[in-house]
Image (cartoon, rainbow, N blue to C red; front, top):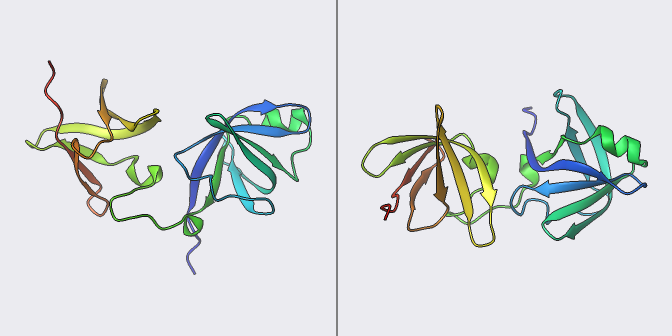
Length: 169
């Protein structure tokens, strides 16, 4: 049996309070279905994995406050700063045909409609209106808005995104 791949759904950016809360930055909307009593994995910066059982999870502006059974003090929470919170890929809800999870897009090669290689998606920035793909080729970086009129094709099998960049004025 093949193990279910762990997918990062958020990152611990700081400890919060004295009871062991973690402040997370979610990756897209992937934390929305997570509730009390569910198991998640914390992938620490050194690559080690720790299992956490959710006690409380609540949205606070653009971040999420997370409390687990295993982390009960500010010092224990501080040790997890920088960790990614992960769930098995099979636990993510199915998406519509034209929707993608961030983990599916990061690493895709990006080409323009005229065949120029622009680079690889290294990061996704969540803005108020639309996401922005950070595409890097060597030291060059291009920011591409995640809009239907710009993103013409996403082919996960070929690991390719085709974009029609707007002309600079």
